[in-house]
Image (spheres, one colour):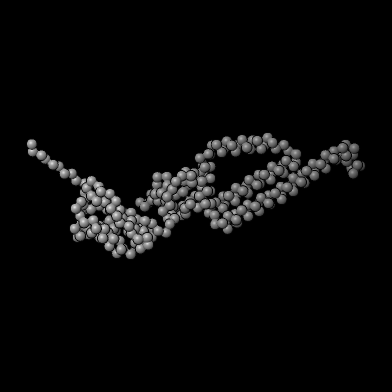
Length: 272
């Protein structure tokens, strides 16, 4: 060996061996680390699939986990070669901070989308009232949720506000209570009105018997005696029952001597 390299070559031999050893370790870390990063990413996606996470969330988070782990592996491998990584990490951190500040709203929406897809406060097909809008959920995306209104408008709501704000999910429960306020004129038979309303509800097969319908005088208005009427129905029947009872009250109250009042004013004239 000494004859081949000479005296000067032998002087560099320890350095070559040292860096050769570091290079071998770095390559080994890189190969094994990249394989492990891919394995962890695939395992995370399988775990999310087993937990029935949204398909879009599975793909996105799986890819993100893989990218982050691969970056860490490359940094570790370069550090093993003796390359100073402090400045590189500082630059990477500063760049990440700048991008994060520029995309703060977008990142908030992304985080909100992740929370929605994980905890599932609603699902596609549910009817929501949120952020001043009411509609059925057509699609849950990473950054936005798409609602369709009854008149076929498309509403796009950012997930950031949706995940942190209040909402009403009308599709969570199997049954819903339908409420009416129905008035009769002063002088009409209140007991008769209550009997007629109860008969109408009992004749509607969509109205549940348990809990029983509730009918009571709630207020004595300026021009009417007002009844509060409540009945429980299966959620899909809510609007059908609501509109049908209004129609029957309008058509049939007169047959029973009951008047549907309207605002009126009595004027009394006194002759002096």
